[in-house]
Length: 376
Image (cartoon, rainbow, N blue to C red; front, side, top):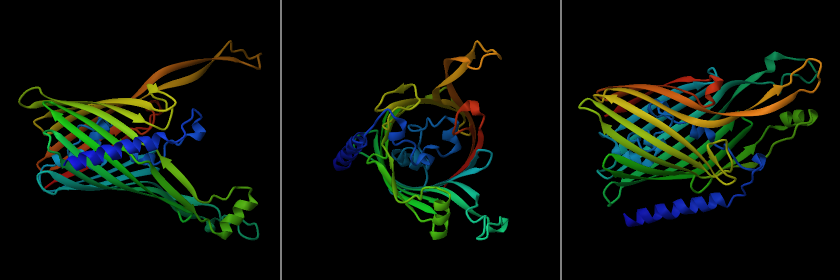
């Protein structure tokens, strides 16, 4: 087991070095950001209701996504989970399937698949025929979808309370028949339990994940691009730099029937300055907080806050209809996104609900998310 721990430390540190070796500038256009961002939305209504403050609390099949080290806490011989949610008034659909199984008393494996896609997009490249006539029968549809396939492994180490986990991720992104990309990445995680506390560290994309894009529009479409003055896309690379998440959880038994779990997470990105509480030209830090209040381990109330950002607005001053140029002043305020969730556990089935959002709370783009977990 010492070898496993040493391998983890080497791979973790090498991932950080590779990520920091990328040129990071304050210019947002030159800094790689938000690649494979569909993998950062989150899975499971339990976690989403806690504002994604779920790294240390993860102890079931959802650990394959959140924290692979948590897979060793699976109860029973098998766990499976599914989730479906829709965003932007149902335009974008997000689906998840997770499977996990203990190998023995000390290790477990898991598999997760995620799809985020927009379907039935009109393709109007053939709208006008060779004679210049508009023919709506020539309009077809296509889908733009992102897929993530995650293979997970977790094991208890010799030191009491210490567990290790790792993910191998295969990324597949497709835009109709025009373009597609493949990518591969690694995650690694450690959990340490002491009394009522659990401390976790998760490194995502520790070796830097690279998507290789290939575009083939076809001769007819490429000719349309030339005639309309558009650039013809070709091969390109998309880079996802490492992300480190530090988490601390505390479990408290309030009474015989009531228990409370609270968790504080700190998301550290290495792709330069983001709109977060703590930000530098090299890294940014984004804290989240969540709680899970349970009654008899059957009914659950959850909540959390996250996505804390500084919003800047321009306010006109000395406004006059006679003046062409109006003076403005800049004002800023801090905003955050609250989330809410409920859960019920019926024997081997857990049903969870969350009211959450992937954008800013003030945009009122909240979605209803449901997930189901089966424990055999």
